[in-house]
Image (cartoon, rainbow, N blue to C red):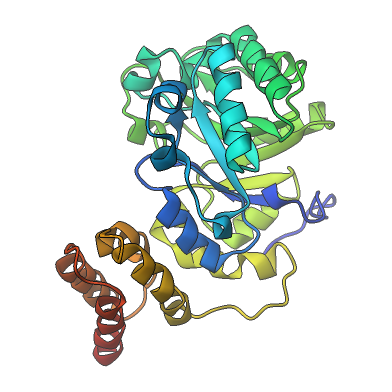
Length: 336
């Protein structure tokens, strides 16, 4: 059970950012977001990070299109050029996104080579100029997702200084991954696991800068942990747990947002996807492009392995649709 603190009221009444799902490369595509929206109507969803160069020079429809059902949805941008970021923020706003987020948290070497992501924490003035330009270009929220520090620039004072400088240009919402990032020597995966979590630093930011909206990210895997963090900060961003255990979000609307709607069963969630599956497979999309995001929907439940094996074996053809999913549900049921 949640142990309430003296300041235990959840800080914010019902904003869409109280709970969000982190942008994750190769995971949070439009089909993942559609699946998650079946589970939760209120959680803020994010795109994968998209670079400014990709948007300016690439296939915008492929990169940016989303279904209206996915909203609210935020576009995360990667870049360090204020003019290009402003241009892409405007494109995103015109495309219908609810928020534009700047990635100042990714530590991968590829991202560093482009001088964006976590390495920008060493350049708060650059980040401030980027945010200022983006804010001038759009009328929707511009937010920043970042680490608590990088390499040896990881003191609380460094973090506070970074946020003060960036917030001075109009950004009032920060999503803080409560780990530092090592820019050399650790892979992105290791940077999500090895640096210790420092939740207290994020809580202290909210105490020292109470006028800002502060969201916490990193290692949060349960609703009870989410509730506890919400007694200290304004929002919680959940990352890998959303992919490893998507059914966690089936009760988020009831537990966090006060929804009175009944909680869907796992089977009901899958069944509600049939029209979406048939729409997209009729467009020659492989079934598993969608259903890979449901492989863990039965995680920890009887028949989970049979479900995953069936989809993995039968879902990679371009000429199959929801019937394969129906068969998978039946096979799982018979195995229980």
